[in-house]
Image (cartoon, rainbow, N blue to C red; front, side):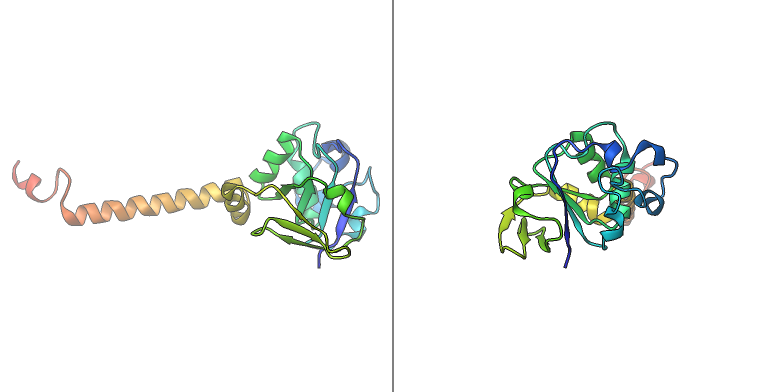
Length: 190
């Protein structure tokens, strides 16, 4: 069961998530080694795949840095849950297929190390220690589709491939029906 890592302070910025001095790579596993190190130097040692971060308001403020999402995801975090996010961090999360969930009262409901159940379909986060269940802002279907694909580029690649296949099928069925100029009866009329 996932454990919760609580960073209760508001306005944790991208330089605290992944310090600029470590922006020498875009490889998640490399960035992960330094995730949150200026806030908690032992954070990465405690994280297990699928764990969650609960954070204060305006998480991810500061400079636009996709590395902040990559570092956290690379460390094994499945989602960050906060009352709200800096817009740029939220967009970077969606674009990279990472869950950033908005949930009022989340910091007060959890202690560091609590186990939690995250139910995306029900829109709930439950503290297994206390039994308290919180409802988070529903994730737009589009964001879930991008997350499922693995990120914006993967989503567009899949979407473009599906569109290309649909166009090909449409062209084949149109050709079979002789419904456009240059085929069938139209060709004989020339």
